[in-house]
Image (cartoon, rainbow, N blue to C red):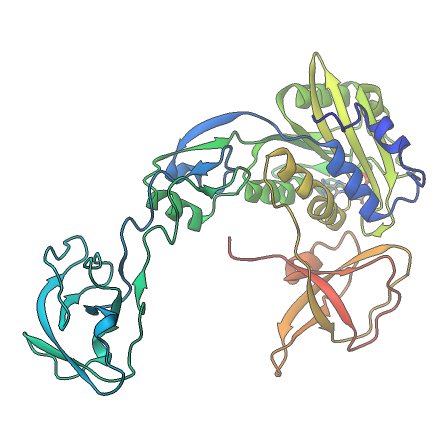
Length: 431
Ligand code: AMP
Ligand code: MG
């Protein structure tokens, strides 16, 4: 926790002159959450492959130059640019071959060249490579360099141009994707310091919820939120503690929160935080710590609890998400996800919104953020266009499944006309 971070959520929100927990704008809720959560500091060393998806815990300084030598980017002939004539073709004598991994040992004089393969070390006197396909009349002993096909420095890769010795190759906080695994391998790094996995406990609350395998009595629903949460947390690389469905009973709820708090860094619950909820969830949450209950200016997902709870000397951040299945996903993506990434020590938890043209009018009330489920496609002119999926009810999970993006309609936007620009968040990217 840095010295600027207030000790409690109450202190943090008391600094905000316009803080109204009953009408909290999305951006303000996001800001409060982001300022309140702090990264874990626990490093483990993993073999390179195991580090995929994890957060780098220390800067990686390059101990070598990559590439280690100037080398050729093409199969062709290495030559001295000083012998390129001002006009006319040039005939060069071939005095040897440089292979990748087997350098040419001799000296290249003016009027001479060396046949060279991609990745082979440049002979010391040469500064330029002409690709094989641009040459003419090549034989074992000589080759013609047609005028104007090559200029000084072409197709020469420089020592250290990828990663320079002594420089930071990867910064702490980077999430390790396939490119980073390859980059670390190119440096010869076999073990990587990463942050330990974030432990996230989650459970569902509600007497009407049934777990898979249980009979579904009248008025009951299967608990789907634990499965969407599982999927979203798995993709973030969290270690999960699935605590099942907790009945709306103060003793079980308190025990669940305490156990979650003692065993996890963060707790995610769904249900029981709405304004008129006739259950004990909110009461227990506030008994156990520093928790704010918000009505956020958004749709879906208005009610949310956020804070930090304590039990037997342990503490954990708490995200009390609403119960409705779509609201759970929306609040997870727009509030919990960034916070969890921040706790994991990741440095770039920014969600990128992409502009697209709305294909149809969308009803929207100004003064709140609305998240509509959309299908983004490419128009015949190559531009991006979006249509919302049918019914947008907060309990209709099908709308999420049919969608490939979320249309984010900001506070200041009112009704959208067909053809208007909107912003979308794509669900899938290259990961
Ligand atoms: P609540 O926020 O507890 O008032 O719940 C709002 C709505 O979401 C109710 O219709 C609940 O039945 C439903 N709901 C709550 N939790 C879940 C869950 N885990 N899975 C599916 N639906 C849920
Ligand atoms: Mg409920």
